[in-house]
Length: 406
Image (cartoon, rainbow, N blue to C red; front, side, top):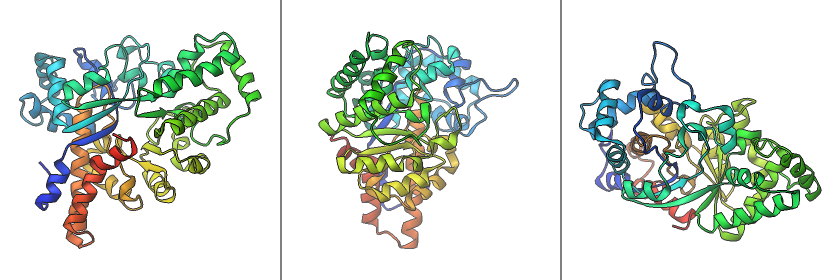
């Protein structure tokens, strides 16, 4: 159900199957209330005593929109919703919600950390995977890419997170040369089975890093320091830059895009360091190489990301995380993104992670937000019906198919 009345061709384009170009595996185990609540918040901590994470835009959306998929009335109380979810079992609940999203292909970041339980999430777990959501949403109970596809009735491919590869190499390398060779070899091997690479360098160093490729001497010296305590999360900016440029080399060789976390990530020194505008130097350095750069999430800096996408031919943008978490205000975020970004540079993602509700709500609020934006432009006569339908198809699936060569 769309929130506005639209011409049939535009409605069909909005409801067509989507390519979810950035998501994570969801949990396969039965979740208690405390676990579930941690998975529907970006903060990673329990709600204060006497409160609940269901009292958030996302939590309210779960009760409104996901409840009917589990055979409940809209706005079912949290306890009723979770009891029904448990009664169905995780496999059935995940299947209903993933298929309800209407996705034809999931591109899954499959990196996992070593957290044994959501309640054991720590800052070190976050940094270990290089993702602000790693410790909370992954772990041994997450579905694989193939399982996401099977339960969701869709194709599925892998996105390789480069910080996870570095951690694995650092824990096995004996000397600096082994480390350098191992990073290059493992990146190449993993990329051969993937459709894209991803970095979460923003979570480690922010996005204002020196865009130049570091010298070999500086990298060897930094690698020696790294190997003295390899189990610690990588925080050395020289090695982070080396890892990023090594990924660029592999992406260029194999024709893969590079996803970059921006905006809504947990940066130790402050969220302003995740502003994608800080990537301008790195983006310019990559332009002659032709490696597509996809800015993920970007909120609340989505206007800066849209500007970069309009300025550089190899830069793309999405606001996947923002839409389900702003819920009823998602249309405003979409409008602001469409102010500057070329329509062939926009991609859909749900940022599904942890619970399958995030896949369903990501798709639902994307469709609702874009429907309102298209309806407004049609009413003003800015776009024709054919334009609106074509743009909906591009953003929903066509751009991702082209960029990821699906």
